[in-house]
Length: 502
Image (tube, rainbow, N blue to C red; front, side, top):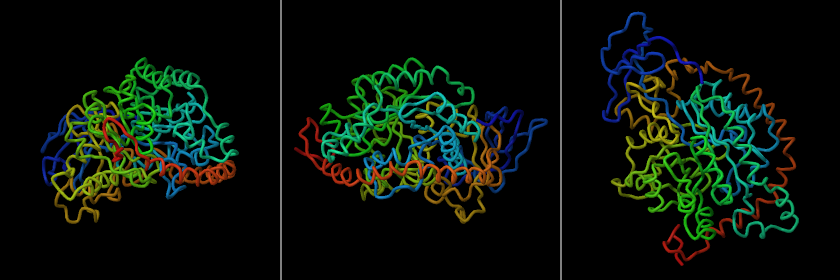
């Protein structure tokens, strides 16, 4: 993370976004050594304080991305009309052959986009194949630190491929493809656990607010022994756990078929669900799952953009909030939602809650969506001192230009931030009291150089992964036909799930 700005700064006269007020009011913010000390109108400037004139700006806390994948940035725009299962099948092609420099580059692109669009912290589930490495995770952390963001970085791991994880999928493949995917099987789970333990033991980024976590990617892509090993690692090192749970209907029904219970219920029975646990997507969680998560103190990372693009469904945001579940908002990876724009993620979360029912009383309010993208996401990351502009919080502040067309006219600040803002009004971003974006220019990295490096990487990786692309093109028709048919099957369970009666 960029170093905090030492000394005292007084931000004078900006309009502070406040969900309790319809229109943001002029407010001063006093910052000392990167931490907010006072907020109010007409604050006196201490002797020697740096004065920042924020007249004409709307100020809001840095948005917090509850779920992203830094490895996806180099695969932006590579797929369309892909379900989640097709995306998983494409992974060796769109993410294969990465050298250490590619891993860092992809994370840099991801972080740079988030920062340029008002996001100052993120939960990144970063994948390395076949095993996570201390060097790779260190490179990802270095990318976030160099850009200037706070982050939680969790190696995304499994010990079962998608072909073995989904009942019947491997058997549906032609014999030659079965032999090929058998050769893609992942290392024994103990090797992966050992690799993660080594990376966690050598983690050197905590002082920069870049923390580590553990991410068993999808429950049924992990053996029970592996899930328990991930649980123990998280406990041993005092870090978070993050997993994709109930993202697609295929996942949900696989859980019922394999465990006789929901995926979250199975993880809870194994002891993974607790206060440091985040369930990504959660589209197919039922009420009992949501209550279980609430009672454990865990969180859901709601990713409306990828939920729509991958055709997975609509997370019951209103129901989760009514049940008291902590909800954060995420973008998911650039390979599954194409952008890292948290303003767009807020808007999508809001409008998706509206299309679930014609009754506006059952819609999420803009205040609730804004809270999810700030305080809710911060809780999912395990941070207690970000997500708000208030005394004692870190000075992560976004300056939106009220002269932008998005704010002409300016009626209702939080409503327009959720439904109108798209990042084009962003002028400055401050993290820890230090400007990392000034006058729309990212100060911590050369974007022109980053673009050249990305284009060179794409050209090299396209050639390197040509054979993997060919394999995906052979696998895709089978996955595309088998998985929707699997999702349409009906199972008799104690509680009807996923609208699938017996």
